[in-house]
Length: 561
Image (cartoon, rainbow, N blue to C red; front, side, top):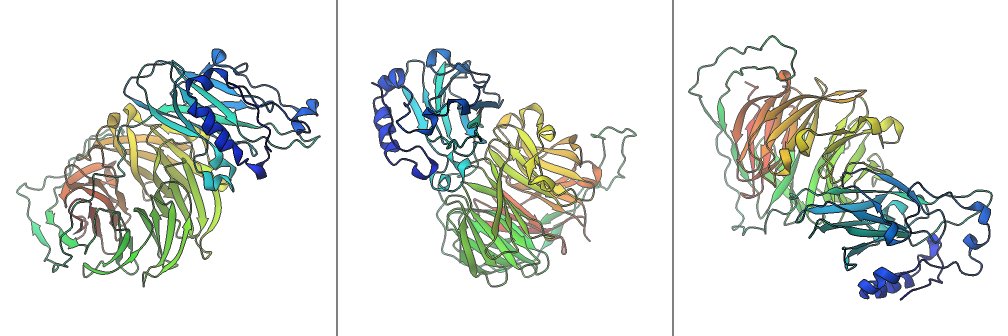
């Protein structure tokens, strides 16, 4: 069968009939695949008259029918396409896929006025999946959310066919002639996504246990003198001075289930813990090591950050895309606003009050001004990191770094240029290592990244030198085992230059020295399934949230007396 659309194609009339028409077409399955035709221009349509105001065809044309489908590699290699006429559509094909592995394809960088729609078919012409918008409500206000994305598991090596078209077309106003277009890329997906680590475990009747006295277990090993090999190699062999193992204090969270993120206010020594399964933020006295209060926040709270100067705590809701702003002293909820799909990591620039948020669902960085009440949107920028997850902020260079778990890359975004990605400084991780949490160590200008080689187990700490001309690899250190659902926490104590990385599977924290190119000093036992970690730079106390034991472990930085 074939179809001709006669509805308005302007941005304002996103055509309520279109979803119905396309639903009917897709319901026809294979029939639609072979016979759908491009929409004809209707009488009075702007595209039908000023023929001298059309774009040139892109380099991939002709690709308007399945037989002319162009290969789209699953290597995260971006292609730029245009809809050079209103009736243009693009066909792509995927070959050489690994059966059983999952892949994703997405459009991005839409020229204003474009609203992509994509349909994926297998080699027989059967419908696999279709997608209109990555976030339909936000598409009405931000054209970049009108991009499309499909993730699927390949049953065969291919070919799979993808059809991309636009549901809207920008108005033509001679002599200005827009050239509507988009970028598209495809890549293999990481097998595991540490968002939901099993169903919530049953929680015992909430009780607050007394704070035990902290004890130190002396090491049985004598303290050798640290010696460094006389070489400039970034992986210099250094023998550490063994430090005493500490029995951490365990802080139980009343009624909390699955705490996953933590932040510390070093001025008040208060600790803030996000508890995923009961949608609450807990406040702990970091000196008395006791729970003080809690407040309800967004759905499945994830990242948490503190603005010490302004007395604010920010909590992300992964499931509902929210940002909750609370008063750091009273835990009063001041504002709740929707900021985007699947927010994961959040950082605050203490000097400017700017807030940085990574959106895993759309691979974007959100920048807000925390000096406004509520925080005002500065902008959305694409991270160029697929499967965006980890985030670090460098106040010296005014740059942000975002890790892409699916693309195995780290992107540098320049705050002096609207937070746009510096293309030439995007780096790939070594040995297909999947980057998770990351943090910037300011004393030596280093970036520490929790990484999973081959994407199966977070067991490396990768250290990069941070300079104005980009990131360069310094060292890769073996740490404890994070498993497939680890990599949740990296924290830096700028006072001692110690770095703390949680290991979810081995139930400990790797203590690393930034003074010695990421030398691993020793593991620190904590609770079951540790994830988030934060350090009070004033007291040196380290706080780790444990997802399965529903507790917080507290221990002092071993560098402090």
